[in-house]
Structure formats: C-alpha cells, structure tokens
Image (cartoon, rainbow, N blue to C red; front, side, top):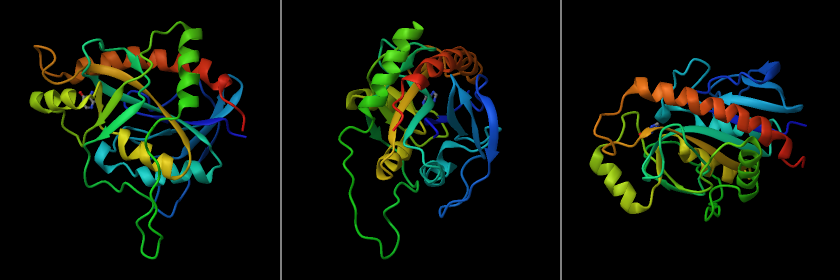
Length: 249
Ligand code: HPA
C-alpha cells in the first residue's frame, strides 16, 4: 500500500531522497495530471510524488489541472496527501527559509476549475470545509519537525492568490487585515478538491520571501530561489521523519 502522496511545488520538482521504483502516466476524466506519478521508497515506505508545476516547472499556478492531479491520486488508492508549497511571509515572525503548517485558508483565486461537483446531471453537493487541513497529518508534521529538530510554525492562515504575478503592497495589507499569515498561489483549489475526494491533506509551506511591501527591497526571484533551496533541504529531512509516522490505513 502506498503510504502517502507528496505534491511538490516550486523548488521541489524532484525528491532527491526518494528511491524511485516506477513512473506511471495516468489519465483521468479531467485530463492528464501535471506529470507522470513517480513511485518510490522513502524511509522504507512506498510514497508517490507528483510535481504540480510539471517535471520541468512549466505549468503556472492558474493553469495547473488541480482536478486531474487530485483525481489521479485518489484513483491510485492514496488516502493521505502532503502538499509542499512556496509562500511569501506576511506575519512579522516569518522569515525566508521558515516552515509553516497552515491550519486555515482564505481563497482569493478566480476562474479555476475548483470543484468535482459541477457536471450536468450531478447532484448538488456541499462539503464541510471548516477545518481545511487534516488535524492528524498536521500532528504528524509537527512531531516529525520535533524529531528532526527543525523549527516550524505549527499553524497559520494561508491566503491563496491567483498569480502568476506577486501581490501589490496594498493587497498584502488587506490580506493581513483578513488574518492571512502566508501567501501562495497554489493552495486553492487544491485543498478543497482534496476534501471533496475525502483525502486527508496537509501542507508544508516554505517561506521563500517576505511578502510584497514587507521589506524595503522588491521581491527578487534570485533570492527566492536561494531561500527555497535552503527550505527544501529541510522539507526533505522533515518528510523522512514524517513518512514513518503516518498511519497505515
Ligand atoms: N506571493 C505569492 N506566492 C508566493 C510568494 C508571494 O510572495 N512567494 C512564493 N510564492
């Protein structure tokens, strides 16, 4: 049985510590996922890895086929999904390179295929989304961070923006007023689609930069890449500790 799926984000298009056993090209009723699914072993358990921006990071956040990605995982019998996502830090305490396990989300995206429940002749369905992230999986991530001696913030509100541009300083001020601690472009509809499919879902957010207007300097892609590199090294180590802690049902 496959223990969990890991959805990789910017800075994590491959998992260096995964010993790959096979790749599978899959099709879904919603089209093709971002990449072939990569199966392998991590800390002795089978996991599957899917890079949401494609194997060479070519799919921008608003063009990701989130439905195909989540459907492909469900179809493969996966029950738990750990998503990795690069974010900007809004909360004063969050610096580039930090890790956050968000517990809430606010959706500012638009025009994305955001539900499985909208086909003709489909019964109107509403899912509970009070707590968007799985408490059990967030607990696993927190325990793994403790064991790996990696500092991480155990909660936070993720504001999901449309991108691909970064935000204006005023947009970040508004998001801060709304209660957002971090800002990223891929958190939605991914989290909601996972819930619609009854997948347990949690996110490791890697702070790549301070959000727009939070530093004197403008946002620099070069700096983001450097911080992501540092953050993703922690993510790989964190995952090595997290995977063995995941329940086998
Ligand atoms: N805003 C939105 N998405 C991001 C950011 C940001 O500042 N940094 C990394 N992903």
